[in-house]
Image (cartoon, rainbow, N blue to C red; front, side, top):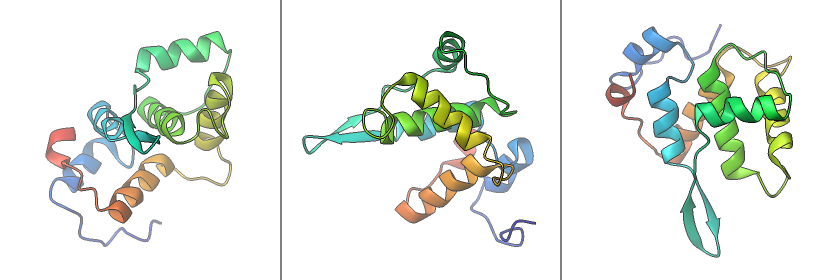
Length: 135
């Protein structure tokens, strides 16, 4: 059982969770990726996010299959890894997809892992989620 099950959540969060559980909705992944950036030469460069269609095409091209049951969780992880690691510890798109596979299929992971970590990052960085807008 999660340790936060008795926690009082921000306004709108309980409604979001009632629809999607601890998973990304399309609107939530769109909002989350709109906040992602890399710092290049001291300047923020916002992410050119991978769309759901492009992600599915990449999986087909590189012949990578995912067991992830929540497609928007996988899409979030792909965009997060692109923003934070692609071109550094993740050298190319195929490696990016394998990272998504490893992350979402981690045998000691748990249901809702990507969303829970995203939420913790928002708490840690002071980034308020507009819950009513992402339902």
